[in-house]
Image (cartoon, rainbow, N blue to C red; front, top):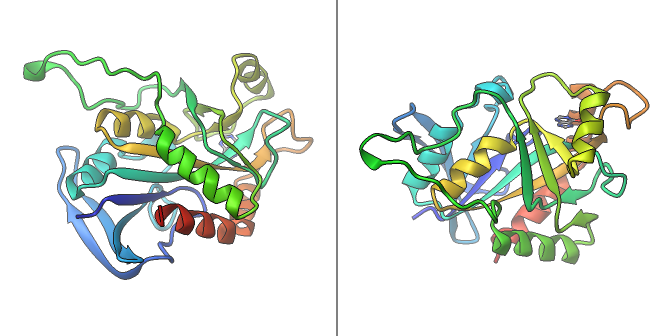
Length: 243
Ligand code: HPA
């Protein structure tokens, strides 16, 4: 049984910590998904590159429902999902990890639920605690042990993308209580929560958001900071999987 999954976001395309990798094609009502499965210290762990291995799928075109359905079918109970984020909070600096506990959803028109009515009826799921507190705790302890800069809490603002935000949008999100901004956290967390999977993001701050940073933002800059922090991210995932 595969109980753990890693979802790799921008800059994380390679399940390097896993051995004996095989690829599984999982059929879902939303399309087929290819998932890599390997072993880490005797545990079977699934790996999915959210944007595809060549970073060819933009945030608004990701088949979030198929991805989460496929992991559920494999038996996954815990997901650690990496996301590159911009920071709206001056205390959350490039290179810091944020284990978000809340989100604000500014996506538009993404299929974002498994519950579409019909014979199952209408389902409303409680979202008081969208991210898994237990897994967030495990990640925070691991980050502490490794001496990483991290934040146990944070509000993730999810935008539709693929463009970056305007400074006016960033100012508005700050006033609403947002801490970091990204384009992929929702509906992934929503679907995982609906599926009853314990899900936590490892948000890696790659930049200060538009209007806070003095220069225009580029995707290359985001990739560069992710690459600089790849080793720390790998060590964090390894320690968290040990729990
Ligand atoms: N905005 C949205 N997504 C991002 C950012 C940002 O500033 N940085 C990394 N991903």
